Amino acid sequence: MRERLAQWWLPCTCVLCGQVQSDIVCAGCAGDLLTPTPRCPRCALPQRTSNLCAMCRCAPPAFDMTIVLGDYAPPREALVLALKFGGVLPLAGWLARQLASAWAARYSMAARDMADQPCLVVPIPLAPDRLAERGFNQSWEIARRLALRLDAAASADLLVRSRSTAPQAALAADLRHPNVAGAFALARDATPGALHGRHVALVDDVMTTGATLAEAAAVLKRHGAARVTALVALRTPAPS
Image (cartoon, rainbow, N blue to C red; front, side, top):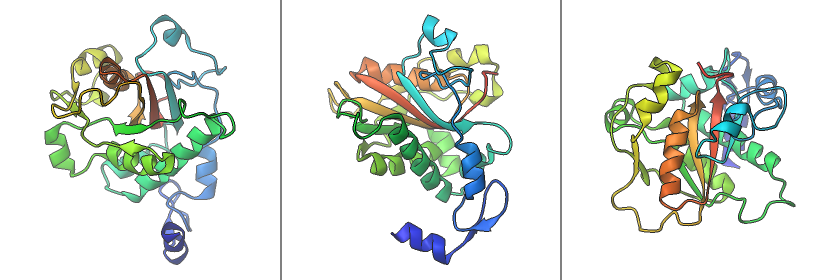
């Protein structure tokens, strides 16, 4: 209710097209972003069909499914760039709302059972120096709002960076998996068995090759997670 009142009293400019209206992303741009696209159900790579892609058939990643809103391409990348580097935190709420809707669309309430529903939402963690520099983790800002909409628990620090890594965006595709190998761990004070048998939603803002999400998901599964679903704002159309 408070969010709807704020939108009515305080119109804003659409992040993507600049139109002044009631939400941070206008209906036209939202409709364009959220137009259904056939994707691999596991890695969300756009393709002609909704079957598993060749890569996921041959070498499936540690996460079981990926839900994304759209492609990381102009002008849509402004959604995460404005959040990550511009500090436009209301975008985190908008992205969380759309991801929750995308989840509901994937699994209708009639068909969903408790085993399908994530019971824990965790973000891809930032390295401490990068978190200190930025002042917030954009993935956590999305994750904590998403958890409320999924009626799930959320943890900002269950998954931690065990070492700093070079920014993935600066690396070629074949260097991204080695760059993040061993980069994540469970927090030292994590309750033993905290992940046993649980379905975890792993949240990030952008997915390119999936190396970061796969490494993080592998850690969650080694510590007992039964299922990991990646929920990501935008995905690059193809690994680069």
